[in-house]
Image (cartoon, rainbow, N blue to C red; front, side):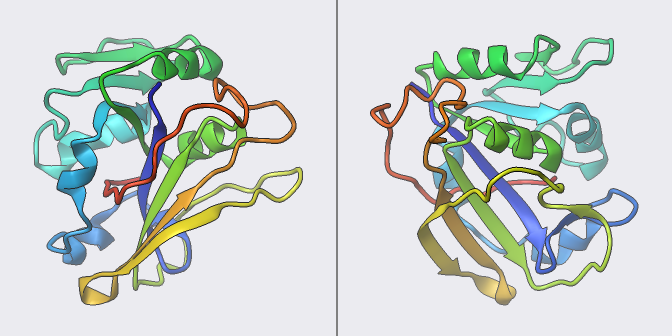
Length: 202
């Protein structure tokens, strides 16, 4: 059973994109090595929202997930241009079930922040790694949108101080006690130890 992972870069004040929705503020930190190679070797599938998908060409690096299965969560019409990528319009529960059934690597929710939060709120996110850059944006897209309900506890599994003042924090998200978790199989579900991921944009 595949684990569902998140890795997302954030400013120190909890923003994943600037006021214009861009991630150019991350450019000075692109030479920092957070262990991306080891992480992406664990991943067989990438999942992202439509806005994240549409923004990738502007980064000037082509399609960065060659050889990986891709799902783009969207309600808009159209078809993806990348080979192996599918636009998913069948809802989050069905997607989580599909991801759990995979046996060729874990699934990485690349972004955006809203999609990552939706997985977490449904109890479908197993691991979350944050790459925190020493920048205060002041405004922009928050890492997590406002939510209601009880506080959600995470377990810190690793922390690393990287170059240029960047910090990586690796968390495990325990199963939801309320039974609302999607495809987790309860507390006895199979799991693997977290490993240091790296990632991309909101």
